[in-house]
Image (tube, rainbow over all chains, first blue to last red; front, top):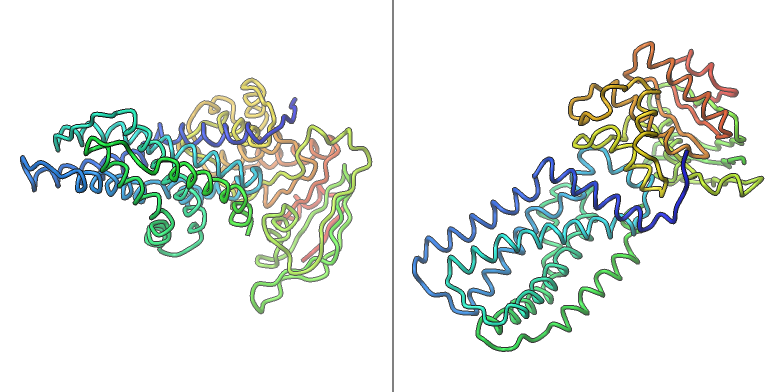
Length: 223
Length: 201
């Protein structure tokens, strides 16, 4: 009836596809993310009507919105599994690394989808002039990758704690701070019409977090 | 193949749950683990599966012929603690859990398994519409799809009607006939009769 294939990539794809299917049918995480982003952007826009934001403030606002959207929604990838009782099956049948990569890819897709929603609104609400879109997209992808990687790792750590959401945000922020500051500074440059800096650092940071996740996730997953 | 549990004990804080459990179970055999509530039947199954660490002791699987086990995962679990994805259909659940292990289960095979456990006609419905008994039947279908070397059945008849209990008996027979070792944790004396051996915790 069955054949056992090399199952690492199959497991990653199965977890990613399952999360996507569940999210598509429930829309829980994406609705949370979008509502948070919409509320944050519209409240800033309405309280400062017609005010042109400085590049520094605009870049900070963009990344603060993306960061807090991530804090509001990305921990659900593991919290949902734990609350619904499916975590035990995942621990039983999947390797920690496959779960980490599958969940990371799902979180990254959510954040990139959210960015596609936030950026047009951001440009529209605050009249931001972006000359170098390619550099801006690179910063977004690198920044979102860092947020997704750290969030996935931290979400797995907090699943058995009380006050998951608060602890998740508190422990994620300091670890994400170097990437966050670099993303803000690079975005300031792009909004000012200058060449971005720090992309290599962001790339290296993402590689380091993903490598640490792959190496350490089994300890988080099985203990 | 045989699975050997040597000197297994477990404690939660200062409370000793059980100690010095020694079991040797061969493929094609079924062991019933009985005992009152809270004696550690489910915990022992979780220790065997690797989900929980024992305080002392070790678990080893010895293979006679490696060519027979290349296409089968080691452990499969049916447990009241293990849920299925309510946003997915029965077929999607079966194929998901199988794919996690790298098994290629086709839709028609998953559908056939749903029929075997009495879920024919409900296999394309999302699990949010299922009763607890239907969930239990789906768990049995899933472990049949996975067909592990060691089946860990924790209260497999819970929430099942008489026809469901007959299915549990068939599932155990199927496991034994496919040369698997079966650990059956149960409170039901009739269910324990399906096993070759019994231990009481």
